Length: 240
Image (cartoon, rainbow, N blue to C red; front, side):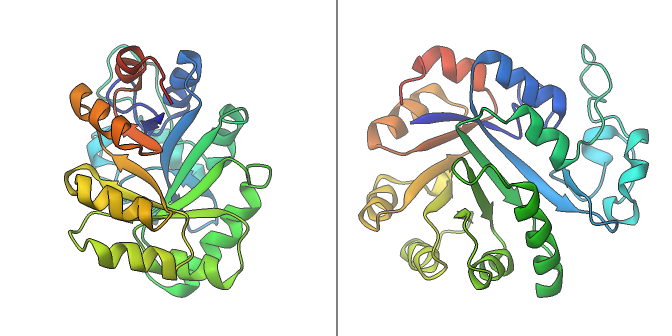
């Protein structure tokens, strides 16, 4: 089992920032999960929400801006000990991850198949060289269907936060995914076993309890997505 930093290390560093990605790199952790959105000028950026309010304190919808306007928003607004962190582009983020062993790229939902096509074409261009380490994940079936139609060479993971059980496994297989990302509350012993029987890899999110992490490790999951990678690294001693 590998320890995967959630949005970098959102419990220990500003989420989805270059500083956060460098933080887990400095810990020696080489696995990360982060979120990708596409702006109107085609630039791919790393940001979870579609509004800056939660992370910067400024109520500003994301999609009304181009990438040239990101400088004004400090993603470390609530982190008093951190210097200003600007919403990073995917290109800059990947430079820190060039020696990572596992990258989960969560593509946030889009409005249309046309948007999915535009985003995935650019995403695959930027991920060139990461074919062996990147897994493109999404809740949005439009993203998976588009990549499937494109015969993408990138591995994919279906993210699940609804209790649809076996249906999710069947859906992942139909979409030719290699992985399911189960929300922690849904990752029962039974559903983990069923996912393993389907020969799908498993990441579980978001796990911040040590005993739960140990249980999941013993059940044989592949990836543990956590807000506190430093704590997990210490407690689990990087047992894989």
